[in-house]
Amino acid sequence: MRRVIVLTGGFGSGKSEIAINLALSLAVKEKTALVDLDIANPYFRSREVRHFLAEQGVKAIVPREEWLDADLPILGPGLRSLLLDNSGRVVLDVGGDEIGATALGVYQADLNKIEHHLLMVVNPFRPYTRNPDSIAVMCREIERTSRLKMNGIISNPNLGQVTELNHVLWGHEIVVQAAEKLSLPILGLGVLANRLEQWRSQLTETITNTVKHFDLMQPMLLIPIHIYLLPEW
Image (cartoon, rainbow, N blue to C red; front, side, top):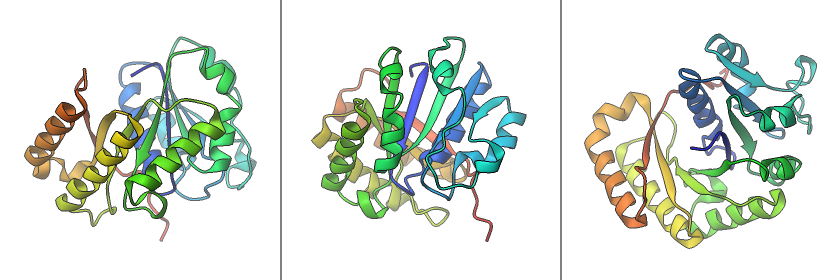
């Protein structure tokens, strides 16, 4: 992965959970910042665990305290200098709707100056990404609005805590078909961390088949996802 990793995707895709998990894993070895650019969605935003992230050594870039709950296009301070600073890793959690992609487009010129990966997290169990065509439409719209090129897909088929193995395998096949349509590689498969050992053999086979299918030059990641964003109810 390149120094700056931009994760985008539709509501319910799981991109914020993946962004948090990724930032925590990177922070074990190097200086890491997580930027919350999900400025329109009022639920399940990475800013909700900013204090926990700080305790784990992750610098959380979020709006000022009095604006944290605002559903307004308010961006965290210092992002531009952070992107251009080569001394640490940066993970951006970006909304996949038009507002989120537009916010990302503000930094298009800066991102094009540096090595970065723009990745789309896809959960085919969500309303706007239920089939390959709708996934492709969302991807192209994000590219058009942000004026950036998508580099790959993270497959994250799930139904939350009621997810079963057959959901993951069926949903991943939908994502594979979308990736073919978009001519993009699938770089990772998300799975709930508490189900990983139970399903490891089947998931390893799925990953092997996906790598062969796309002729990837590097292993596709199996991403264990610990859940940090829980509803208050």
